[in-house]
Length: 342
Image 1: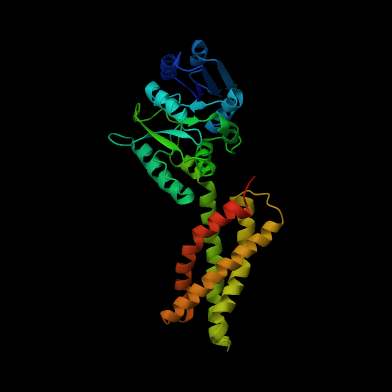
Image 2: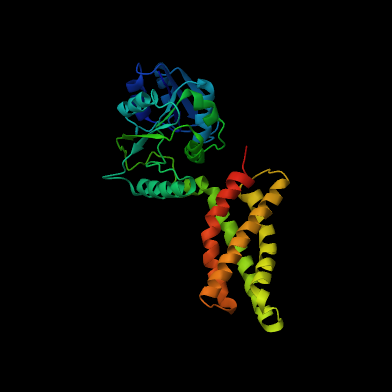
């Protein structure tokens, strides 16, 4: 039998109803009080339904609560469920049954988001689903689901994933790329109580937190983009008026622009975006990527400029279009190879 793990923050009577319905159906039920400030009277009443109540003295976040529970349960099958009544006992049982045969990856209880769905839930799921697909090539129909089955052999790996709040759950899904099997997605009933008012997920702040590295990478790229193209345009302008080396103007402008912007970009990405303690060789790896991207940008920019007979500062527009196409390739290479965390 699977163990049930429920992180709870400021719970109400719906948690007791869920625990009562689950009692006897699962060998172990573990509850984590993540520093609740209201609804604390619920926990003494819950003791008769659960094996253990683990307590965080202060609120540390859902990710931290899940990892505390996983560490206590150990390496056996675990079903995580939310404490707010949105997961029906029969759906939790369906995920547990599917986990018996799906041993190489997660089992996810996914909502259809059809019918009367609160706007913030529909908005949050739509954008996180497609951003997640762009970053991982995994299409998860409900990226915000808290109903997840984790096979015992994966528990230690899942518990070691960084993150303490909602970004931990997204990182858990991203880790599915490295599992033996893709996540098995089990349709479950969509339940919202009082327009999902009990949810502690903030669709703006938590989405920013979840995609912090991508958003920071975008900011880094925008700043580098502004520096790079300003220098490129300036050098083109200077060479056009004061130099006879018109044959090499694009190459010289490319080299000058990239030398300044690339060094800024490396240190910003290493320190701010990926928060990496990458070894010194990462600098050489980064410059290898810079040269490869620059070579591709130069070849395509100069080629398209020749095809369309473009001259002067207008070439900058072609350069912008080419480097936009190279943006995501650079992000994935830096994240997975150059600044990869252990």
